[in-house]
Length: 332
Image (cartoon, rainbow, N blue to C red; front, top):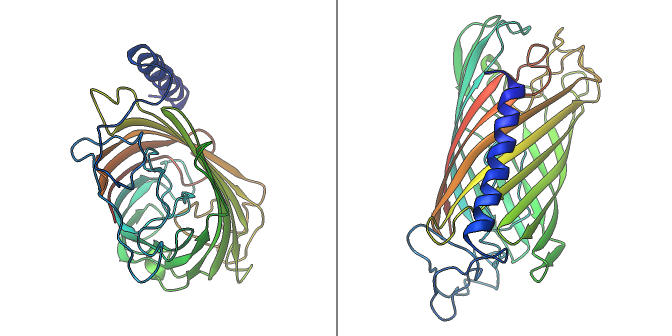
């Protein structure tokens, strides 16, 4: 199925979901099942099974582990997991598996990469959080490279919610992460160190929630890495919170712009969000891709998500053809 048809179907699904939801309930957010007195959950958050988390206890100091409460009605993004960071601050782990395919006509000559990883986040205060967003293991099988497997680079950083407006359902959070040159070269993970400042925001309108971010990736060595600007948009809509609580379809859009050339590899394709490989002929190139999927919040502590991503531009000129991402979140 071509990408234009997929994009049309995805847009139609989101519009149909919105229309169905408006017909099933008023435009105002549907009330979640009654929670226990003192519960720290958002009053409009819904979940498949347990609707209550109970009151938060103070551990060491206010906000530690508990982080930023009151925005549990949002649904976390699924696609582009390494750099798409939410503005929310919480503690937990996220188990990830990605299957990414390269177009047969790309310079890599087809093939795929599979990635298994674990992300971790720790709320240090209500607004300040530690994030560990990249690690794991890759199985790389590209046409021009020998089939191999190995460990990924490691990235971690901090973020701080500077604007928290519960009345208007809005959060704005800047942050920064550092990626260490700690992976294995045989899976393209032993490239330059990289620093990536970002700004992330979220806004809710009743049952519809939007999350977006902008990230600048700056390599320490400009010969071995490329300067990259990327952005992400996520939208979710609770189609039937009373009959299907905790479930929302999601539509996501991702963009990546190569700002400079490196000298490490004589390639006209970059490493996208998988690696910063210092390609020599990518400056000015743009890759945009879309994702459609869903997230199911089983309880205040657990959720599962899956989406299918496909390139809208440059699927033959870069490494993005299609991708499937599956995750499982455990939240404090």
